[in-house]
Length: 422
RNA sequence: GGAAAGAUGGCUGAGCGGUCGAAAGCGGCGGUCUUGAAAACCGUUGUAGUGAAAGCUACCUGGGGUUCGAAUCCCUAUCUUUCCGCCA
Image (cartoon, rainbow, N blue to C red; front, top):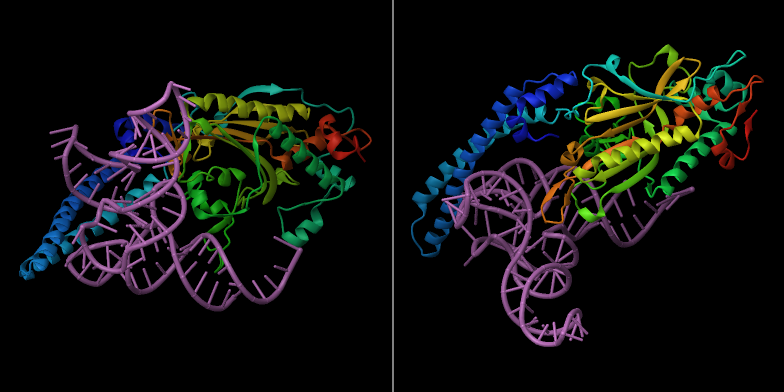
């Protein structure tokens, strides 16, 4: 959520931000509506002042035994006028809200304009693995090594699902364990969250109302407004909704493991077979609540942590600065860590490191009190650490051997209890 | 699944149609006392909008209604607690 007063003051700045995001909106019209609201509110306030005064007078007349009929008629008329203004106000407000609450975040200055094509590769870690044998894709490897049961997953849950099986389940769990231990070491607080959230969480995180169609709703008589979380960020960022945190308690550093549920409508591409994209996948997510001046420190910390995980796993990846049009709605800056999938010869996202600045803080009404007593909205940042369900195929493909086995990354051996998958 | 009771300021909790933005206690802040602290005593203390300020307005979970007037009455949503049933 943005500050309408600031939009009024610096309209060009906001227009420029939205242009970079490829987001079209008529700010001029929005500002006009806002002015109208202010005007109506003032009018309403004047009427209410009269009403309040009248009620007091009425009480006095009644108690002194005087005639109240004239005043009563006046008051009824006043009440009618007030109701009219209130109704008008509600109408304008509704139109205004529709546009205002849908506004995306601003973007940081160095954000490249445009869509995906304008993403910038900042660096590459490791070398593209090359194989002196015919490399397999992760689907083949999963089947041969009996790590994933695609057929029965489809049978019980439909397309876009898979079942981690035997050693596969243990590998996924090992990656999760590795992530958890890394975050604990860095002093992040572990949360195990509910997976069904209230609508307002989606609003607070900035995903709703605009992108409510991307999530699964519990569309029943029971919990009609609740949905399956698409990422733990949606929950973590709402944890302190309507709270005022103390400055000395910041930063707050959380992480959570959850499955993530997404409809992924229309994104079923043939090259994303296997476990590249599903309706449910596992992810460990980090979130920090910070004071504005701590934004950069937190950003570097989260980025560093996410990168370190992939590095320790010894995987080839690249770091990408996203263009504005590729940002999630609520984010002002996002860099992606993209893992290399040899069979696709493509890099796919395993972590998004983002700052929302105070966009989510405003939407969730999460503030912090400074040492001088004044209050301000918190900044929130988030980063995956990491999407294990995508790390899984990357490990299989990047670590595969000529004989069809897969070497287990060193850091996972202690969790998995073996150093080779065969 | 059934039944009942609730939701009031940072917390506990009174108020149940007008003089209520709201008692009291705790906590917080300031002071007296003290070498310092504790205790005791005195004072002070909700949030937001608007305004230069005085002030004005809104807020007693959210929404709607009744009324000249609602924390208080009615409807509704949400949440909480307790009891019974079922249950990992």
